[in-house]
Image (cartoon, rainbow over all chains, first blue to last red; front, side, top):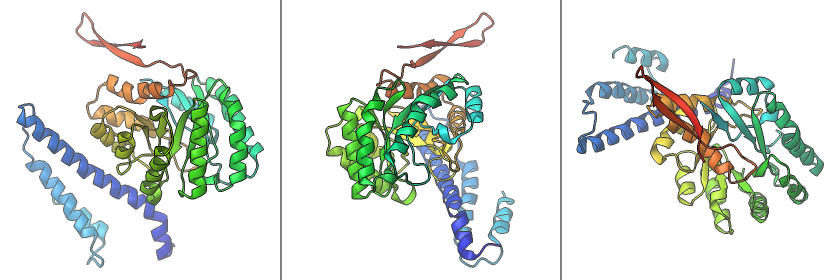
Length: 87
Length: 288
C-alpha cells in the first residue's frame, strides 16, 4: 500500500482537477443567474424560481464544508453519500 | 461536423488516432515541434525531427484524408542549451519554404529563466523577419500566471504583428490579458492538468468566439485528442448552434492559420433549408 506522502503525490493533480471542476460549476451557475437577471430586466428571462436548484447547491456547499474537517467523526466519503441521500 | 485540430503531436500517437479523428470529423491537424521527453543534444536531431513532421507525417495523415501542417522551434525546456538553440534557429529558415510549415512554434516559456526569455525573443524575431506565424507555449500549473505575464512582457518589448501570434494553454487566470493585448489565444484540453472541455466552453461563453482556438494537444503523456470532440458536444448541448460550433472548431483555425497562405482550408457556412415536409436540412457551403 502507498505511504502518506505517496498518497498526496499520486492523487494531488487529480484532486486539483476535481476541485477546479466544482469551482467552474459554481461560476457557471452564477453566470447563468446573472444572464437570467439581465434578461428578466428586459422581459426575456426564464422567470424560473431558484428555490429547487438552491437546495442542491446548498448540499454541494455543505459537502465542501464537511471536507475541510481535519478529523471527521466518520469517513468523509460515507458522510457525503449520506448527505446526498437526504435530497 | 468538420473540425480542425490546431495543436496535435502526431508523431507521439498511433494511426488509430488518425482513423478515429477522421471518423469524427477532423479534416486537418497542425503539429507544433515539441519536447521529446528528454533534452536533445544535437542540432541534427532537431533537423531530422523537422523533416519528420514536415515531410513524413503529412503522408501518414493523408492515408486517412486528414491534412497535416506543422510548426518548427526549439522547445522552451531545451532553451538552456544556448549554443544548440542558436544553431537550430540558424537552420530553421530553410524549413519555412516547405509546403506544410506554418510558422515558428511551439516556442515560449517553461520556467521563465533568462535563457528561455532570450530564446523566445529570438524565435519571435526570426518569425517576424520571415513573415511567419508564431505559436507560444505558456507554462503549466503553478508557473502559468507568472510565465504568461513574462511572455506578454517579452512580446511588448518587440515590434510584432499581434494578430499573427497565438498564445496557447490559457486558462481562467491568463486568458483576459492575452486577449486584451490583441493576441490569439488557445485553450488546451487535457484530462487532468490543463483546461477541461466544460471549462473551455465556460470561457467561450464569457469571452465570445473571437481570436479563440480550442485544441487538445495530445502528446506522449496522459492526453486524449478526443477531448476536442467532447468540447464540441458540451458546446452544442448548451444550446449553441451547429454554425456557432463550426465557427469555433473549424473556422477560427482557418482564420488564424490561413494567415499563412499554405493553409488553404476555407471557412465553411452551414445553411439551413426548409423542405416541403417542413424539416430542416443542413447544407454546407464554403464562404470566402
